[in-house]
Length: 168
Image (cartoon, rainbow, N blue to C red; front, side, top):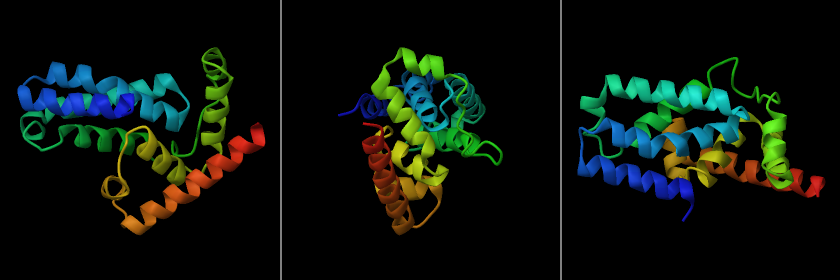
């Protein structure tokens, strides 16, 4: 099981154990969500800012959100909505290239390959592989038919594989 999926399960357990404890919810959920947005945006600072904003919005609605089956889904949807606002979607920043170089050439190649994908395909790939969402869950979050979600994921994975093969 991926680190992101394990973290999301931990978030759900924390919420069930202590519905009113936002601090534990935040501590368990911030990093996995920020990493998803980072993979999509290519800018760690922006990803952290947007994740923080999503959690701030959740705090203001915590009494209602905490009773949901999956409060983490509400925060994730909000963060992704912020990340894909017009003017930001598809604008993968390359300003943090040095930061990426420090984590290794393979991760840099992956980040660069992800950056070449259309925003809708990149979101589907990141949500499926980092957030461990099923096609049905991606469709629900993106508010699109399952067939469209599957198509975006398939095309994104194929394009990503081709981009990675080209770089090797």
